[in-house]
Amino acid sequence: MNKRVVITGMGIYSCIGKNTGEVRDSLYAGRSGIILDPVRKEMGYRSGLTGFVERPVLKGLLDRRSRIMLPEQGEYAYMATLQALKQSGIDDDYIHKHEIGILYGNDSSALPVIEATDIMREKKDNMLIGSASVFQTLNSTITMNLSTIFKLKGINLTISAACASGSHAIGLGYHLIKTGLQDCIVTGGAQEINVYSMSTFDALSAFSVHETEPQKASRPFDRHRDGLIPSGGAATVILESLESAQKRNAHILGEVIGYGFSSNGEHISNPTVSGPVRSLSMAMKDAGLNPADIDYVNAHATSTPAGDASEARALYTVFGEAKVPVSSTKSMTGHECWMAGASEIVYSLIMMHDGFMAPNINFEAPDEDSAKLNIVKTTTEKDIDVFLSNSFGFGGTNSSLVVRKWSK
Amino acid sequence: MKKNEEIIEQINHFLSEEFEVEKGIISPNGKIKEVLELDSLDYIDLVVVIENNFSFKVKPEDFTGIVTFRDFYDYVISRVNSKELA
Image (cartoon, rainbow over all chains, first blue to last red; front, side, top):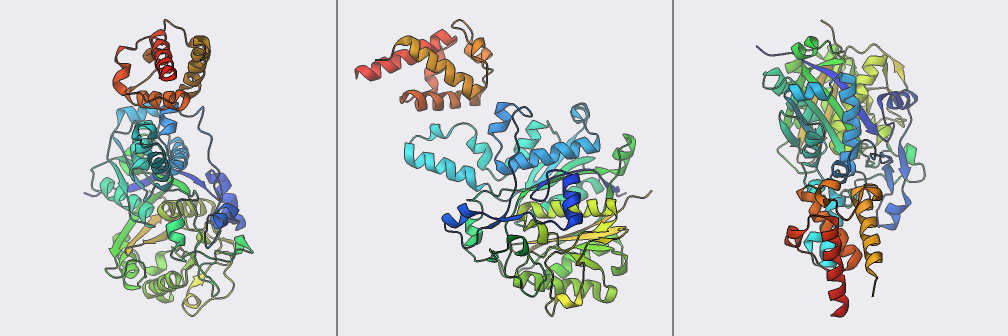
């Protein structure tokens, strides 16, 4: 007997806000978190555009040992998880007595690798790298750090699936709970945003060079889009079996009812239509819903010419004439990469809770593919009962999640 | 040559900074592991701060006989002096 999987907590630390309240206001106002970073231009970036996320001050919140082992994105993940656990009502005592897991999306930790390499090259004595670097550099840095900080005793695993990492983390957590293997899992995604983290991506000329107006540069689905804008932070979603949540009288924010995944099986970076169509169809089948049942789609659309066009075609293939409202919050946040699949669940949950759809800002003129979609241009009041969120990544990894408003 | 008092003051300063403790809790007879709450990983960082401050290399096994801060001061002072005499 499958279990129902509900969401009992969420946390967010992003370029449009450092908690759900700030993020809600930014989403409602259609406020961009994108800046032009002069340091990136000095370092040879083709595009100096980026989301701006302030580093949190953790002294006073965490002891020295815990702090020095956290890389930048780990700090964001800690802040988001602190918020999410608090909202869910899960405290240290509950964690001590229950087997709570963690599945978090992360796919790089560039800065500490570079810092350690600099010491290695200069000093020729690896001990001088210090004790913390190895715990910052490993790709599983988020889960290894958060599981020890919060003393988690269930599944402990990092999900690396490029820009679909956060979404797959939630999807896999959903399955572990649905099948009864875990009762509660901390899921999410984190993304570093330092100047070293995005140079290899910049090398592909993937970023928008619309530098004169940074807040207008991210324009998913718009005819004049010219690339994505890197961004970062972290988002945490607490997944829990319905029985577990009800047993402790937790407030339920929503229910995960569908997860679809697929691999394109083609080019490493060029998108396809068929891959996303399969993940979308699988998620819809899992949720047992028809296209008209979806009230809002939070698109993956990153503002790249090819990616947005492929997703538009995939959405039209699956949803056809249902004219489901679609927006990409990346128009405000930029592309939060490994974190995006989790943050966009948080953004959509906020919209569901507050009864509005955030706008796809900078969408001024459609192209032939986006013209077939019902794109939300301005903030729109809407009672969202069910939303779907897409995430796609390099290597052709696709993930689609369906979440429903909680009702007994 | 640096006076021993100056070296001890420098040690107390960097230990306080690195391990985030008040200087006042450091005393010659105090046990360094307990007072600074060092775990096995922290000894690596101790090696790093010594080298960064005094420019001599430390092997982890050098810590074997060091229990108190006085032991630690004596070790560092002897290494500093032998380096300066070399």
